Image (cartoon, rainbow, N blue to C red; front, side):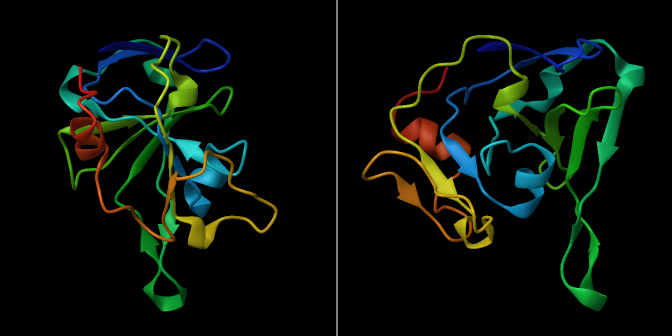
Length: 161
């Protein structure tokens, strides 16, 4: 599926191709929650990194590398979180560990996205105390990472495009 995205102020505009366009996975980790989550979570999609085209605003792009680990073990995350340096909108995550993947934030996508048949709630072990996860009865919930990837979830439901 061809996705078009932008930041809130319109300084950055981009396109990317996605075989995993259903916004089903709600991440409650402290990084997503604090950099992109308005309801206590953020939703990332799966996309093909080679298809990313930033056609407006390359100079406005900034990258944040979160700190992970505790105390002496703290180090920069391998994830490169791209955002607009003018308005602060979270746009996408790219990680050299999986260079072929790009994870646009669903909130940055302007293309109408398909409604997911269910939601997966992950990283609930690090959610904020004030957050009450929403969703439907039967939604999968994980304290850490789920047992399937974005691609596997889509494939299991025959939802890849």
